[in-house]
Image (cartoon, rainbow, N blue to C red; front, side, top):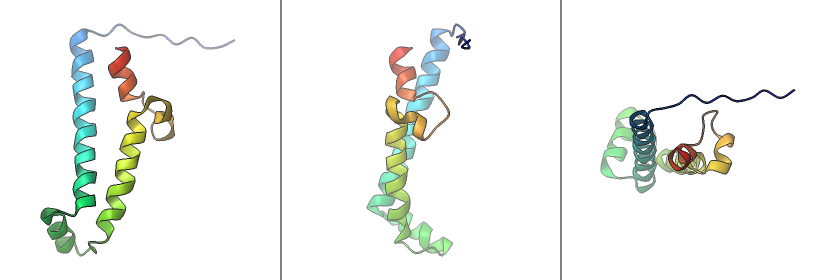
Length: 93
């Protein structure tokens, strides 16, 4: 006997607010990865203030960007998250 999944009806407003939050969070995290990869001045200054070597910025940026990309792709989402894929929520509604 297999369990049946029940889905609750969601208003269109909640659906679009949820989609917007997903898009904003993914864009912010990708932005964060890109600035670590590019090693812009604020990143370098922050690393120096915290006492970390600037060479670690690349090691933070590349894996972060990979994880965010994998998270957004529906088929690979299960590898990095227990939540439903954001692109699946956006596309299927």
